[in-house]
Each structure stands twice: as C-alpha cells, then as structure tokens.
Amino acid sequence: MYKGLRVAVVVPAYNEADNLPRTLATIPDYVDHVLVVDDGSADGTAQVAVSHARPGVEVLRHLQNRGVGAAVATGYQRAIALDSDVAVVMAGDGQMDPADLPTLLQPIVDGQADYVKGNRFANREVWRTMPRLRLLGNITLSLLTRLTAGYPRLFDSQCGFTAATRQALLRLDLDGLFPRYGYPNDLLARLWVGGARVLDVPVRTIYGSAWRSGISLTTAIYPVLFVVLRALPWRLWARRRRRDKRVIDPCTSE
Figure 1 (spheres, rainbow, N blue to C red):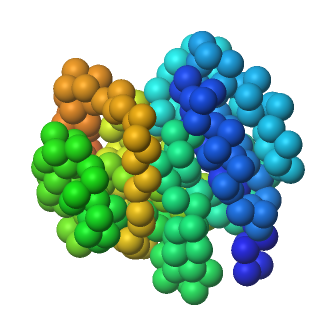
Figure 2 (cartoon, helix red, strand yellow):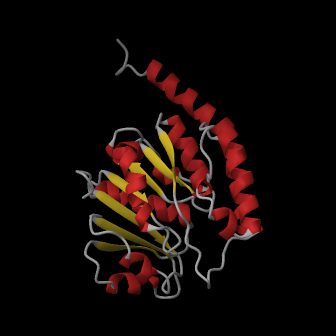
C-alpha cells in the first residue's frame, strides 16, 4: 500500500523470460499486487513469473498473442476485481525505472489526476540514449496525438509507464481498447471522453547493452498512426453520443 492506496502493477509480457526476473525483483514492497499478463509467450514467460518468490505475484495468461493493449486491458480488469485503488503499468522488459513509481503515484494521492503518464522526454538523458529512429517516431506520434486525443499539453504519447485510478478505469470500455501498439493513443482518447484528468510526469528509461527493439514500421508505426488519426472524429462522436444519452435517459431526467 502506498500512502493509503492499494496499488496493483500490471506487467504485460511477451517472450520476456530473460528480462522478467529482474523486472519483478525491482518492484517495491509497497505494491500489493503484481499482475503478470503472459500474452501468448513461447519462451516460458509464465513459468518464470510463477516461480518468482516475490509476494503478491499473479500470472494471467492469454493462450494466443493478442497484443500489448489487450494484455494491459486484462491486467486492468483483474486490478479492478482485486479492489485496487490504482493500477500501474510496467513493461516486462525492464526498461521502466521502479524508482519513478512514487512520481507517478503522488499526483493521484494528492487528488490532482485520474491518470498519470510518464514523459521520457522531460529527462535530457533520453535524447542521447533512445535510438534515433525511435526518437523521431515518438516525437511525430506525440505531436499528432496532442492534436487528436484531446490533451494538447501532454507529450510522449507512446510511453507505457502509467498509473490509473480505479474510478477512471471503471469509466472505460476496456474490452474495446485497441489491442496492439496503438493502445496508449486510444486510451488517451477514451480518457478524454470520460472526463479524466491526465498529467505528465518525468520518468527515466533504462536501455541495457543488449536491448533491441521489437518495433518495426509494419508492426507498430502503421497501426499507431491509424489509431491516432481516427482518435479525433471518434472521441467527438463518442462524447456527443454520451451527452445525448444523458439527455434522453428517463432515469436522469427530472
């Protein structure tokens, strides 16, 4: 528990058997639940998670690979079922620094935000350590997401290191969340429709010497671009539909 909040950490993992032990070992003791979502891995990721000695670890399995967005949604749904106050997402590859967890959680403790996301670009180190092609892609997608998702002051839309309140998650259609790499962009648009307060905080990214990105143009950039470009008309339509439903709903009419 962190300052009165029950905290669940969702760890989406696809073929992360080598990196997962280090990731789990660094999660602080104040985290109540660690929900590893094995997204159809073929390398023993689930077995590694099950055998880990850290208290509170639970393994959720997708029998087939469904995508990181689907894995996050599964973790969120389990966190809600466990009555967690906050659900944090930390990737299984060990790139997210657990020392930044209090930075993500404190705005929620203070009642300033419903959803807090990391901004790697607030840390000067990332301009030197992030691979150039990935740097360019992240900047481009972040600028587009600013225009389409409804949060013009946010940056680093692709950062998956986030903390969401239970109340914010309950207002979302998690089953409808985009299942693959574009899920953070889709999630921001859905949060805007639900009226969530979203805040950026600086976080650090850890790139090991053997790190290699599994993101390519066809598997990530195209799908994310699709999600970003559909966000503006979708969220405006969804917000209007929700408003119209409140107007005609006899249960809410006087």
